[in-house]
Length: 234
Image 1 (cartoon, helix red, strand yellow):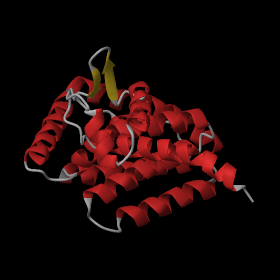
Image 2 (cartoon, helix red, strand yellow):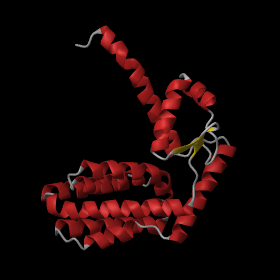
Image 3 (cartoon, one colour):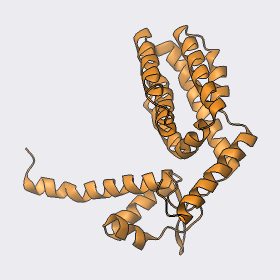
Image 4 (cartoon, one colour):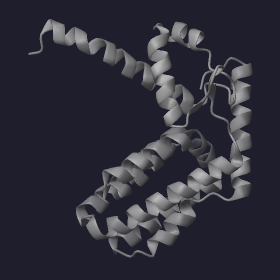
């Protein structure tokens, strides 16, 4: 059993990690206005902590590209641009297509059957867009996990965090939602047959066109500014 002294020594680290997770979630969900300076004092007051863990969290988020730092000016929330969103989706496709090839070689029949069962259970549990988005993210991560490469999973988790806000918006579209079910089924069919031509299906499923990126970005910006101006939480 850990001593009292050991328990106390862990508390500051626990606080720092908790604050980091809270601030990261806020950045992921665009609770900071894009391009706006992050007020460290207000954020510390809001989370009831000192500025030290706030500053540590923001420094970590700079490396993760959720905020930027301008010397002598401070931290700023990430901007939103259609080209950036499209490029992240392109990079995600490269990562997942590579993982799919390895999954065809390394995934067991039992693993593939489990992924299908989990997707069907999660996606049919309700019509909530946020729930469907989480199920979609879990589906893609599960396939990538069959590659048995932690670096792929770490990269994909980072990309998913950057796209989570836009992924929900994308899946609100009826045709996009319908296509998601169909394309997931096609990807699983190829995976079961160890058919690497499924890479092309997966790529087309993920990659976002320039026009679609503009549409999703505009919708995202409209929601962020509407919610902030009206004091609504997201």
